Length: 466
Ligand code: SAM
Image (cartoon, rainbow, N blue to C red; front, side, top):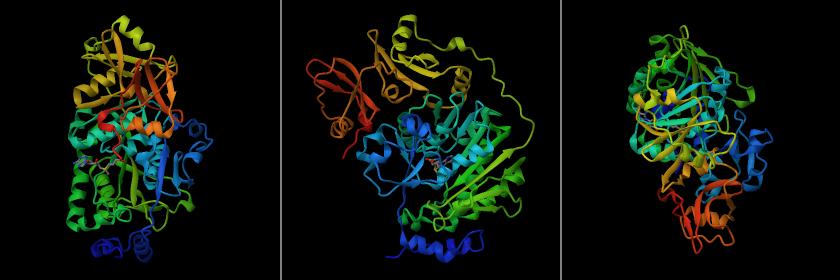
């Protein structure tokens, strides 16, 4: 059955910059499926060194680079990602190519060499948060927030796999961020929307589209932006994006922002051969960027960068008592340091019996965020002490903190899949004790080798079931 796009959607798009109805319909009917991934630079040294995806060429059939991304590649076919151990090791994230343009919006509007406080307000499942994390400096802090409780666990899982230290995950409503007035340098609002940009990939969603829902989404987008607005510093950057083609959710939101707040649009550079359409909002002329699937290799997407006007002010931390933070004792600290790479400068904190590492110098931020938000993950959970011994957590194995001196064992693909299914594994000839299991040099998680068996410590709730 040919894909039937809603008539009312098509008529609402007529006359918009770059919209070519015949090509747009044809592309949706052809239903080409694109697969793209974005590599994690710290788990792929060749990407960090600008040498390209050298060992990924052996792993996947890479068809080409995503033009506007430093880390994004198209694959020639869609593999079974679940059965790829490197996905579970956080070596890459499967992400639609158009959304990777966030990199350009951020780089072109922000000085990324400065320590920044960045908020990803609508973050689950974590595609844009993992990208933001790859772009900001180690001295910067990313707060990755998701309001819907049932969606937070997948966000936490994806960020643990990505292996980040400078990230905090919260589960708050946008209006709670008003408590952090003048705190963030950058705020990304990747808003919930009517989703027409993904109709080619998911034609079943077409039935759920209605004009009424577009209007509801537009009102919700305004509410989200207005609620979180005080948290953005003067001179701070707002990046707004949707996967909807509807003007009511895209350019009209820019008009609404410029009408109601002290803010200005930012023009972004694009290359002519990227075929991204620059639009301007009807009343305010604010710049927006449209991605039409008939014109580029990506799905439908809209993005804009704006600057909040006004004199920049520093955020003043209220006097909070750092002494309230529990620290590990000397013996515990000495034990933990053996698990952490020598070059890592971290703050260690203890909560109940759990030990966490936070980026050095981030305690005031942590206390501030803890008193304002409902925090679901902060820094890296290292583990907990049981009988003076550290029981290492999965987060430590997947993080950049782990000491290379910890015993590690390479697995074949078959063994790695057995491990990820939480099945019994045999690791004969290895010394007893904790070992981090690896596949193609990337850490998968912990095992404890005992004289007569191996205990598989892969998290039960993440095990693969196929
Ligand atoms: N940024 C994510 C990524 O790249 O993986 C995708 C975000 S998705 C487009 C929008 C998110 O907004 C969803 O996770 C949804 O749960 C959340 N959301 C829904 N209603 C919301 C609301 N009223 N306020 C804030 N976020 C909301």
